[in-house]
Image (tube, rainbow, N blue to C red; front, top):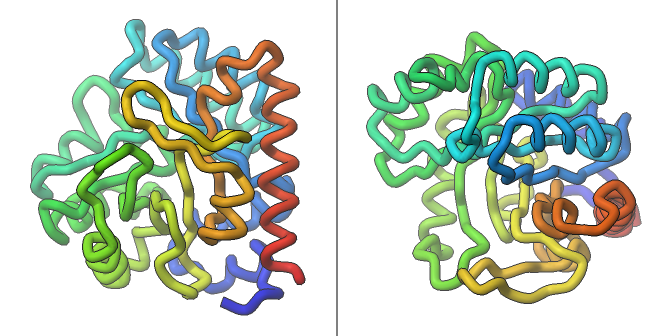
Length: 259
């Protein structure tokens, strides 16, 4: 990918309309920070969304860990996302046959497709999983991220798996917008790379989560968006910490691409 291509310029390469909107948002809001809001009550999510919304481009949820989920919560979260201009990413990690994921995506108690701009999936079931999700999400202007690699120790998503993930994404550019990945897979500017497990200091937690710094994620591994959770949520001053991550992520991105 050309070094001088910024987010706004990459928007014209995107074949998915939501991806184009996200590229423009990144450029105009000047943030490539995604908040991983893995808390267990709806009010906590709403409070963090309101507090940190001005600093982020994407808020990542896990609605199945919320003990008090309701559709009223979703409406409130959508309003905050509109107010502070960020996208909602439900980290569902779909991993079943196409017919099943269609129902998981569109129905159940969560109705994910109605409010989550972005979802993600494993390619383990084959291309049918993307076809099934796209039947629900395409007409709603949604986007899909594929899991190419993970940040947990000894996971099975090796380089061969990542290559297969890229090839499958290339079959569905109108719905797949990019990857959850530790490293960039291609120079094609249409793909958005989001990297989880980012903290200001590298390390590992007790359950095998391995952390990389914003500098490593972006400068060495070519990520576009850094996903930060506990590094912000557990801080004494989450807002100040979010501003640190935002500055680090943005500065490193333009250090890498705008030479």
